[in-house]
Image (cartoon, rainbow, N blue to C red; front, side, top):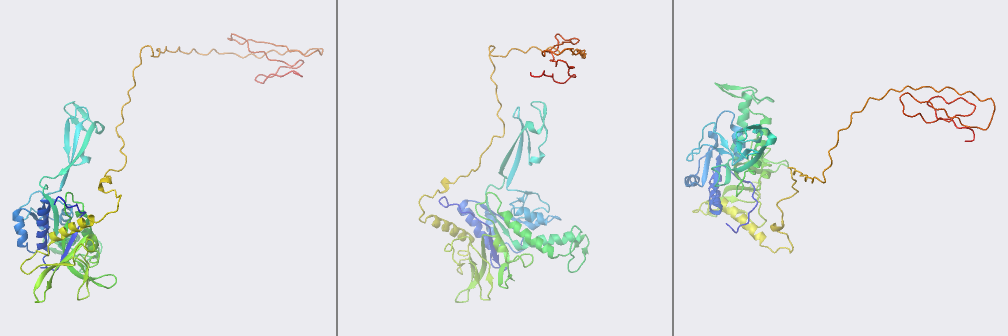
Length: 468
């Protein structure tokens, strides 16, 4: 819908006991994607239950692309399949009718990154590589030169992977089975000796032909809980989605830290039951309610409630307090007309439109006044400095080469002869004696002498006459 403001979506969890209609609810999600955005749904299935008829119909119509993820069953690929699927990866080759793949099929991501290597001199494209760390010295035929990395232009190109153009949503059926895949992998890894630590309850390894099992311990359960939280967070990074990822899970009764009976997602162990709801923005539950005639109706619970047994159901919604009702109940002859996930998303869209239609305070900047770029961009390639040529009249004359210095002439210092003392005392006078040095053009400056006394030793300053 063109007039619908884009709502910031989040992950959604659908809880329910077996047979409550969780998987069938995903058909209404696929219909919402097509009717609203003309996009299709990728459905990843780990559950062993039946594929309801409404889903099979949409698969035949091309609105749901179905993958039976357990058919990628090669040894050691269980955890990899779970983690990569929640990042939006899909089999490179799949049977569109049954959703089956080969045991070790290659998985491809929703976006593809290419690194183009080109010659800086000629602009010739030399290579296209999938990873930046694969770029190295490359030979260019055009200029017949082996270029090092600083001599290459490397550009990054990110684009949608072919086949993902119409994908707008993802759904994972279900989170409980995905947690079991992780724990099963740890069981097999412990049996083959890949991991150690605390032994399982039976304390040994079970061997049957080429298959070995080592059991599970408390660390394996904690590991599985952590991986499930990581899967939910991974799904929020899938690009080009128009609505948030949807997970289904079995519901389970447990007790929180305060001793209150609660109903939440069934995951490895019981510790994560009260925590799992915090991983999602919306948590709903499928169940059944009876009318006054005792007839059961499929009902979708949208807000937290406490049932007749005193158990608190850990549900939540991202809508405003008046944006969604407490429940959506189907009439007997009209299944999925009210208990409809697409209808819930339409209500969330309407809740946002209603909030935006309220009277606003004056002077708000709005999205038009909200920048999308922040910070300062600096030029990384230095601009070359050009020095203008001087005219002939302003050019400096060429410097003449300096003459080679001549070796210094050795000089021999001669001590001056002593002056005899006068026999009579007269008015003080100064007698100057000059002694030329060998090789000097002039004599050293005169040294004043005190009358009646010997000359100063060599190297001392001249003596002054009394009264001078």
